[in-house]
Length: 317
Length: 317
Image (cartoon, rainbow over all chains, first blue to last red; front, side, top):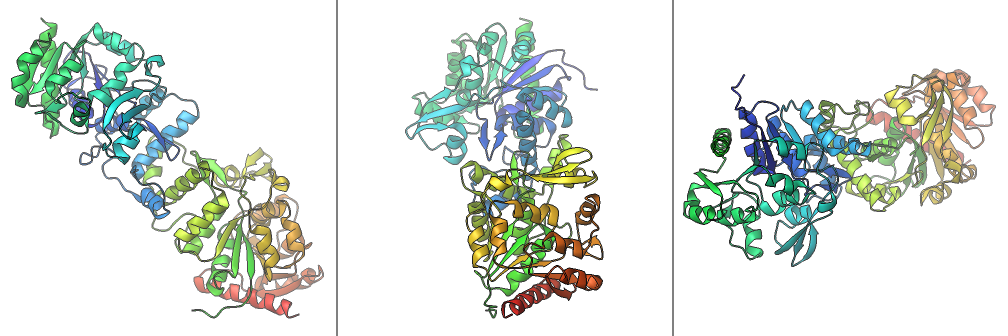
């Protein structure tokens, strides 16, 4: 058995970037030491199925069955149901793999039977042999809407169907402030030695989580570390940099730090952004500089290890 | 192009046996000469999907993509969604292939959007390159319930999950008499030169169709031929013989003829049942004796050819 780090961490994660860091943390921490809270703002109903893209990316990644190439879905996937839909002239903008589809069907059925998303997620984790706890940010739907020059668009429609092309003017997290976090979310944030905000999109991955009733308050009384999802002015993946620009903010590690400044204790930036060190420090935020890109499993573990050490250093003052 | 038979036929079909004869008829008749009306009494909702077992068996068979070995589902099928459901501890009594699943998803979505089952079926036929018309018996759900010694059981639950084990006491075709046939059903029955009742289960495949408002009346004014689904006292496939026995009737070609005697013009029985010829004739029903088993594509065409000739002989008096 791996040596335990003797530290309790709660990570907030969106999709790919979040899942990768969570995977590194899961490798290093003992079962029970890590809780991953996942954005469900981009959940949506498609073909009658309740689909949770970020939750599934995190689950598949921790289960070791994620498709690393696409950043979504499962490896060793087949596409026969989807091909069948395509041949019948159906909707094809959202791709559904066969194995993935099985999970959506089973989750939708259990939701229909009255189980909560957090219960179902816990059961799926057990079936997948995941020893860490994965929690959806909340059990009720809190759909993210994107305000754009083309109107107000549901998130997956903007993100997948329209490929992030419309110009962003703002975001709506429907009912978020009236929605309670899923059971265990506040408790795990309060009991953690460190909260880690993964390198996920601040606007549409972390933003929805921070909007949930009581979640932001829970962060304010704990050590919060974040890893920049922006390197050299560019998003590692996805539309974060484009969103910053369209909202009149220069995309940079510094902009992310400012985004989180009300609750952020320490910030991890990339070597490429070393020039922003003093600006960020001036916000009253501690800095760690390293290589943030996670191309390999070793990168995930190394970055997780550095984040844990950064947290331990802050704790021991 | 194949020589046309210059005859209009409407066939009533359940699952496998009906699909096979319909396939033979489709081979011989020109597009427009054949309409197949299909039982939808065993349709049900499973995993939120609207599944039409008989309609799909007929459609897949006429499209040339049916799984001949199982008698349901598609050939070249994969089972990854189903395996995924199984691995998550989901329900596995009703098997769903990946390609088949795509059709269920697309149909359910279109029903949800307000299209009728008959519209959707017509569109699917077009996409599958089927030139003959396939009509569900009705557009609204008319679920078959099986009254048994274990209680009243929904059809698929009885048929697939409980494998026809409970002892049958009767059947309920929910709302059938208050449900109109799908658009085109009565018209095609009225305009046909012959109506062919395929070798399908009289109780649960043909029975539900005959219960639909106005359908039986439409049969009474036309030439109706049927092919016995019972050979030598045994059902070619499925529980028909068991049902006859449990309802206190000896399963035989004669019993099927008696079942249909109010509207049947001619009956096709197997060589094995030649001893029942006079009994059946005494019901005022014309008889044709041949080999009914359809093991090969050639058998389907040969039997269809014989049924057409039988009908033509009756027409020309």
